[in-house]
Amino acid sequence: MSALRILHLSDTHFSGDGGRHYGVVDTAEHLHSALSHVGHLLFDLVVVSGDVSEDGTEESYRSIRQQLTPWAQARGARVVYAMGNHDRRESFRAVLGDGQPDADAPRELAGIDLDRPVASVSVQNGWRVVVLDSSVPGAGYGTLEPAQKRFLRETLAAPAEHGTVVVIHHPPVPAQTDLLQALALDDADGVDLIDIVRNSDVRVILAGHYHLPVTEFISGVAVTVAPGVTNISRAFADPAEESAIDGFGGSVVTIESDRVRVVPFVERLAPDGLVFHFDADVVADIIRDAGRPGAQPPVSLT
Image (tube, rainbow, N blue to C red; front, side, top):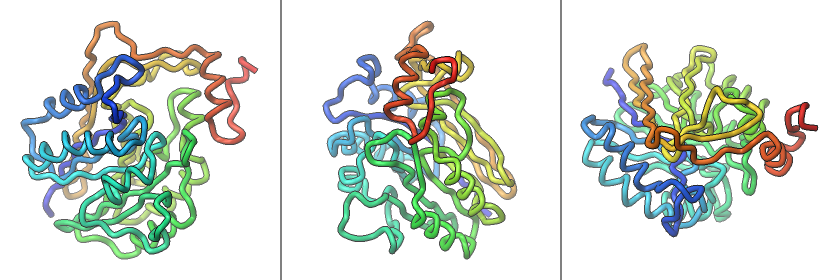
């Protein structure tokens, strides 16, 4: 079996007007730095697992496509995108299609409604890639509708020659902070996702959203979260607060035989630079406004 090498990126947060993220980060420059960090390597796939855009404009998607596509092609890779909570389905689909070239959209999710979930499957060189859409329009947390779960279950009923890679923005693993947990994938949907891939040919689930590297094995399947291209969340600060470092990261994922190897890279750009810092009161307000229905701020703040 041939090995599969993936450059796993996430949370690029491009803006249509080229504006700086949080007024600080030049997102195009951060992506350039991340690509340069591994520019000497060849890849089969370059995956951006959601929050491709910050403002959901067609201009933002054209901008990242213009930067990423020639870089990937020069290294023998095709590019795969997934929807994140900052992305907008209609404009995403207008520029990036269903997230990957030569892909088939599930019949249940096809149609004239451009705001339907962006999900697809493709098979190349014996490797199958499934893109799921965990976004909820207008919200920060994630869900998976029954139609997507059926699509995934039916797709995995017959194994691919070498195996399957699943790409989704919201990870089916817990977050490190109160805010990100309130904006996480619905617990029941996460359980369902793992139940569907259990004992299947899925080798790895690639996710984003948390802006920090996390790899967890569940029921024999590797779930790996890429660090953010735009910034890096502080994993071990006060969980009731939220802050991010001015830096970039990604992961190189290699699948070979019975092995899955994840090598993340994180580079800080400013020694003491933070992109943002939200104290516990601000986090509690965001949880009330943008968290899952029923999500509550930390007990000490209520």
